[in-house]
Length: 221
Image 1 (spheres, rainbow, N blue to C red):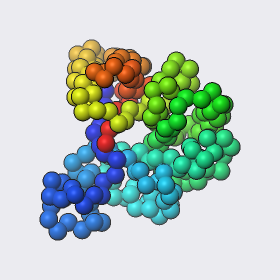
Image 2: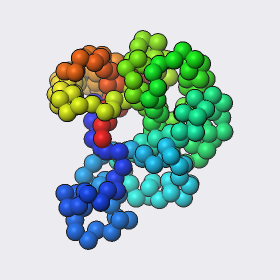
Image 3: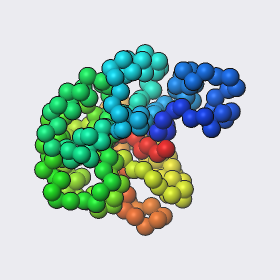
């Protein structure tokens, strides 16, 4: 089980001096961040899609093994509700070849399900999709089955209270220990495909839905 910890963004003035040493140029913040964390989320792409040159720059500066998740543009996820995604998918594919995070803040609506079905069918096979539903009504078997049918798809949790983060950190340690204990030369992981349980807040939470659970991660900023 691979566990990577990161934040949303990597360039913040108030991270001086806890992360950035005094006098560190802004252009060097990403390298310093990547030396301390193994993952990051690009959040600004939700508001304005970066130019290909920006993606090339991040790709050149990130060390091997550090994973960058790029937030999908709101023009696709919120304005178009994932319908007719072909043009946006071409634009996205020209940018970052890695994991993309798609978010939805609205309550679950059956009118959006056709859009999700079309979108997941058209997404290129190399593109790993992590979906963050910011409303508990989306955490249902219909959605889990839809994501399970698409290899490389994951369900992301966010905006958890501090008590929940502590509780989930304990669960991740348990899963990591179980995977290590149960491993054998022919079995690399004992991690189940889906976890579903309740945190201390009483909300039913599912940290990962993935056809490749050994590479799933729970990210929180």
